[in-house]
Amino acid sequence: MTDPNAIRQDLIRHLALCRQILDLVEREAAAFRAAEPGGQFGCFQEKKALLGQLEASVEALKGRREEWLAATPAQRAQHRDIDLLLRQNQDLIMKIIVLDRENEQSLLRRGLVPTRHLPPTNRQRPHFVADLYRRQGSVSPVSAPTETASLVDET
Image 1 (cartoon, helix red, strand yellow):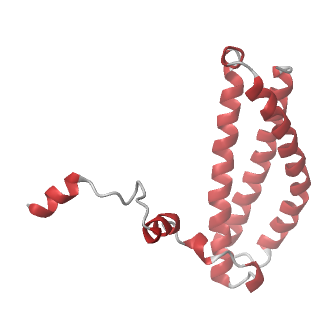
Image 2: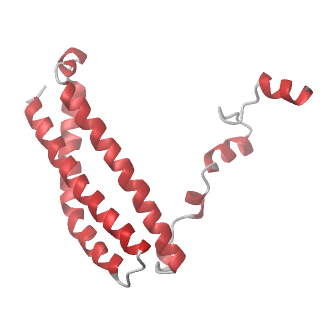
Image 3: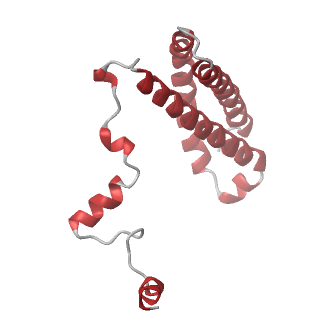
């Protein structure tokens, strides 16, 4: 395994970058709530500026991921702080995704997104995959009938 300090430092840098992005997305959401004209477009420029840093950070983490997974479980167990940093990064990324999707919905409601940039319709259907399985005749874990359901129907 490579130096765990290098992995740790890359994760810390990525976490700091994600915090910047979360701050930006939160400011964008506040601009939508306050209905500030043009406020979200300034955020767009800042997002675009952070994109290069994000791509570089993700590439660095991809290489570190392979090194981390190549380590034995005993070696990884010695560095619990790295596991904590991974979880913190994942949690922060999920917050960013949820908030950015809400901001995207605000843009759509205001009609500020060109039609060629609209998200696919299936993205708006949360049970799309389950429906596909159902139509194909496969039983998905979500739609599998249970005995308790049939007992409820009988009573």
